[in-house]
Length: 403
Image 1: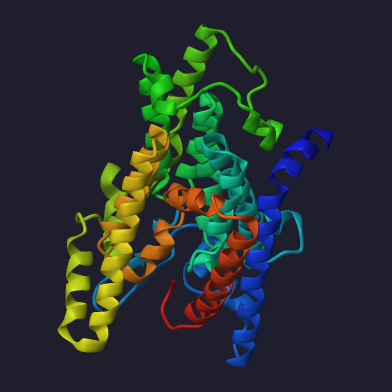
Image 2: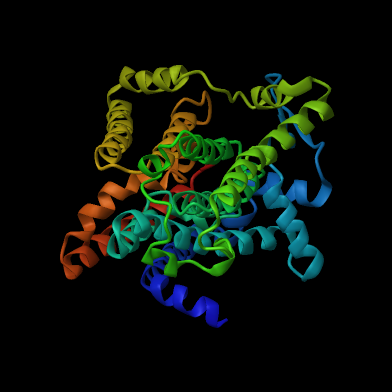
């Protein structure tokens, strides 16, 4: 416990601020849902993707729904780590599978906030780290962080893997990347970050690519289980740790994809067929562009089209600013892959804001700007946006479509 005391004290402002924002979001959701005769807890744990995860936890894989148009929605599309954890909590406690998913998401969201703080502090300092966490908390779709979805779990694993990459803990980074790859298909973004850092290390440009592999004072903000026991391993040890980390990083995603191919009898690309049954794939953004273009066919929807274009432009602008501000290469690679997969997917356009949520380094330029303000002014900014986010989250989650 004493080993965790100092890291918790250092990260406490970020974690307390995060908890306050998310509590506000849950309270507003509860009030809004009650006014509409709905259960906020059901919205968080027993609708849309949450139901698919609990079915996997309860019955395993093999469930599918055949739609009248011929589409086949198979639960093989959902990666296994979250349902495994739901099943484990159900086995050792009186919690239902849905309850387990909610508990995992709550704990994982705090772990994600801590990881985001650690990454941002390592690169830009403690104040920017706190601001980055608060900005992640007040995202318009931040309510998803409290749902029995896999976004919080994935973001936690990704953030800590990236921190391990930035501080030269390549074996830890690879292990966390493996787990991230068992959580969501976008786990490939974490693998890419681990690999680009490893390649840079072996080609002799690791310090420039990763900014620093030395343990900085920011390391005091992380628990010991994220740090390797040897603070400064010998060069040969660093080499095999790096190589082993690179080797194991893709095993989670690759293992599940290959298992799905074997189970469906369609070989290594069988998972793509499963996704196609959901009308989901990677088309370079063509379908999304058509979706946006169709908004301009009538006046009211044209305003939504303008909003979508502005939103995409903001995402791309933040990425370019991150490049100009010298974000470490692993962060840029990770963010680029997450953003590309989110924007260029061919289906579920309303879910794109949620799919972008793990791309937290996009928030770092805004966190730096917020950190430069006086504390009172930044508090007013965050507070105002937190209220707007809570109201929007309640409105959004009480809608008819999946987030």
